Image: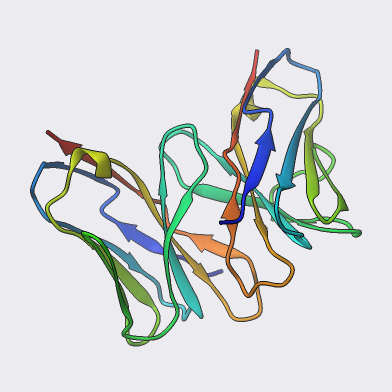
Length: 116
Length: 111
């Protein structure tokens, strides 16, 4: 089946630094990727929709200057958490849908961010 | 805003018991997906249902899509410890790849 890979799986950083998380579709092209945030024991909350070659669409309440999304190619989207603070600590998950498919989403393994 | 109400939120049962998880909405979805998520990992798709009244079986798991495509259920027969995990339902609307997620059901199957 289709594979979506996230990197890094775990990251610990100091408060005030920026962290970049990559989401790659390994065996298909994805025009659209999605970024989610998940707090412990809770469901996924959609943060933004990432479209290749254009600006991301952010959900209400998500700061676009805080969570920078770049979708520079059909196989890579990145999420950069800028000036991270402890409250940004969370599990970040991406998903991607193949360009030639009709709706199936494939999820990455997730990235655990801990801000000290 | 479309909402998916998932219940129960937590479920702890003995091995061998049956259980049902429900996903309800006032909105119509073009398709509904069920995922299972292990701690520290991304969700893994179990099934997609697209037709009202559709029933799909995956070994001991039975998924049903409501006739009006507003609700769905997941039934597990003779639960095993390996079924432990977070089960998420997610609905999609026609023409969009975005999913609306339920809050999830944390299932624990005790040996």
